[in-house]
Image 1: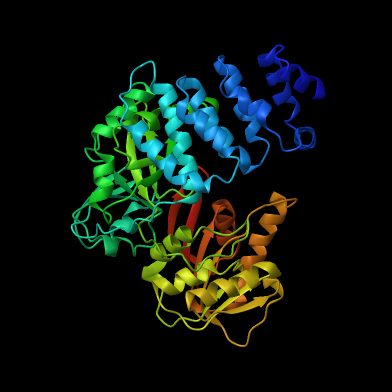
Image 2: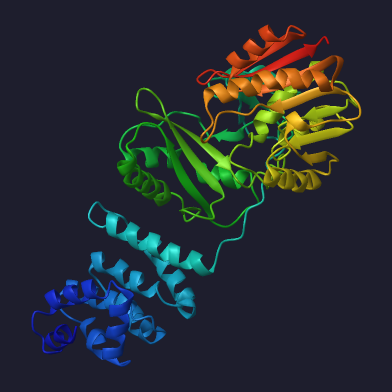
Length: 494
């Protein structure tokens, strides 16, 4: 590094030596060594910010940025302001963002505003967009825009309720307002009561069609331009408190290879934001909106919006989970499907309770008391207690193997998410567990007691029904066609 510094100071092969020096200081040790060699005197690089060769200016700026001292900020900002070579300008910002540039924040905002007024051409578009993105990222580091509040309840926009594909009717039966139509992913509701829709526990997520609802196609730039014409920014402003930039991300669901997805998303975002008047900003964290592009068979994309500003509090209680935990929407769906067979005030047992989700959702569907949850996994039981406390529910949890569990009275109902093979578990062990379950369950159920099972092994349930003739199958519901997950409702005849 001494040789590089000496050659640079003497004006010998400056560009090549700057590039070599940048390579050297990629390690923290060499970066500290260079700082020691310079001894706080950065004039050698500050002077190069006025060099005739733009690549010398660029590399000098990037080296200064690695020195981690705010003393060089005046040099970098002055050079950035006078720089006329477009491909270099963003590198000054890249150097500055490694430092504490808060005193320069207002000036950076003024630069972004000025940049936004420049006309874009095919020649300058790439570099201006890169500079805009860098400026925005720097500003957001210290000055996040205020969060928006969703206000679009009445009249509500058209909303897509993403549901279980096999059991859409369980959700449709809970909708009391608006017109409802089915489509592949769930239900489309027009003129509905959004506050009521947000209470439906069998909805996987809520999406909003981009205004117009038309598929978009073409190059990434053409897709971004088409989305801009659809008025995404206007839509967001209509349904939120006015003012401020909306931070968003783009998610692509389709067949685009992973290595091409990033560049595709960036180009779509660039074209979309060019027409957004600063109201939209693509970020990777802290976003309020997800623009989801769902690819169709013909290669076009259906655009949807997921709003993280929408207050969805249905499953806020469930902060503690384990790898085997059932998704709360699946537990809610299980309870909804079995609801005609559930009675209020029933005495209930979950023999494989996990973190308590199934019991909590069963109680939300039809109130029960008392409720007992048993699980051999102590960590899950502790997490179940925490979740249940947040849910404001009373459930008695016991850390014990169900097959060793005893109780002083019989239960009206057993409801559970049946264990599945995991780790070193074998199919034979799982089959044996199902057989033991049907035998043990009969010891804890009243005559005419109900059994509700969520299972990924329906063949083992069917085998248990054949082996233990005291159970009648009342209903079975397909949950996932691909892996044959089902919900069974059984009656114990004793």
